[in-house]
Amino acid sequence: MNSDTKHILTELLADYKTISYSGAFDGAVLSAFAKKVEKDLSDNPKLNKKIFKIFVELAQNIALYSSDKVITDDKTNFNGFGIFIIREYAEKFQLISGNMAFREDAKIAQDKCVKINTLSREELRDYKRELRKRPAGQKGGGNIGLVQIVLTANNYVDNEIIEVDNHHSFLIFSVDIYKDDK
View (cartoon, rainbow, N blue to C red):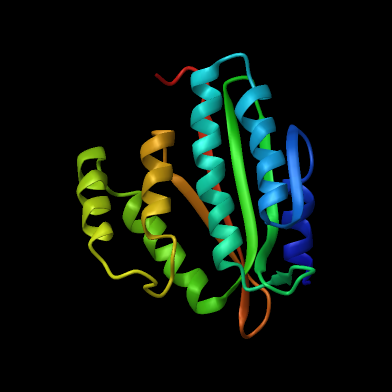
């Protein structure tokens, strides 16, 4: 891991950490983490539900598209490996996910974020309908999930790529969810 990656990871895990997890994104971990997010994060059930929905989308991206895979004990499944952080600030929650990705997949994800962040709510809904018509398993993944995150958060998805080696990048998604958003 290069020094830029170490610096960013150290910064991500620093102050304002409410909840964090690093490891394999398997069913048991996701379930436990999801319960914490859904029920205990704030006193506002509507806000918790919004955070929960976005958490699920970001966690699925890690589980499905991480280039680092952990094989289950029974060798029947491969779970993506990554990090997930929820930070709480006075006015917002910030959800951050990160995982290793193949460089070309990270670039595809970044391009999708750029496109999605330029669309209005109505354009996002149209784009989501268009994506649903595409064949399953299309290269790059994260098609509808990133659109759903923007629609749910009512905010953009930030994206950063850290080049790790000739084949891999560390892919970071971040989204802010404002506490007073209706």
